Image 1 (cartoon, rainbow, N blue to C red):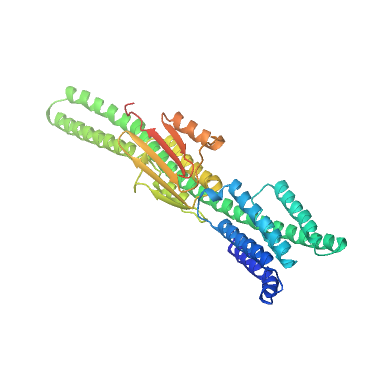
Image 2 (cartoon, helix red, strand yellow):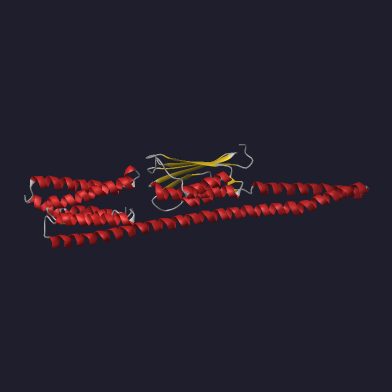
Length: 374
């Protein structure tokens, strides 16, 4: 929740009780009504404080949040009834401002019910017309608060989506640059092998034949030329081998570009300084997998931290990711995770998902290196 909205909510909660507090200080409220008001006032403040806690936990689920909002609503209405005062109705506006992450119809229904119940409560303090007018005014305030909070939430999510798209673009660009470098090295190695290598081989054969057909000083020169040709051919083969060995995609920089992003989620990446992958398809599968993990954690986990570790060995590349969100005892694998699993399987690897309620979400994946034993 935005800090300024939290501050406004606490300020409204405190200020709305001031008239009643003055009546209590003047002894104009019965002891029974006083006890009920104090309990309702404290209950609202506690429920609102829990709603404002941003760290992950079971109270961040929509069911628990709905229960806390219901407690706030009942507490606010109780403050109005027990204090015989109109001002605590402002707490209902605070409740409406917290409905921004609920479906629009559910939020509108909640505001409507609050307004209707407020009108019935006000009937015990004023005439019908005044009660309806008062309920209507506070209903308008609630709609305004809900609209403001919803716009703020959409703006924040828009910023996060833009930041995510920007980092994904940077990561894709880094992978394209690396892939282009690899493709150019492969092209050069093929050209050296197919053109210069073949011509040198043909020249070596011709010089070998010439050395057999000549004698004397001419034969010595031909043999020296033949030796130089063999040495040059060996050098070309060494260069081609080195180019092919270096023609692996280094995905480390692309992964770092993907995880250096702004937003509420802190991504902790543990990856080797150089992470070379033999095939571009394998590199893309790993990059897309990490991208999907970050996107899912941002949208669904309610986490503040995400730890991603990539290890490389002679026969495989392993991916492990976990977050500190609430997790889920049961979860459905959506299109994103299904696509991630399909990419890993196309590379001969596998991926597993584990979601423990209250223990965060965990992903483990393996991509074998080409030529590695099963």
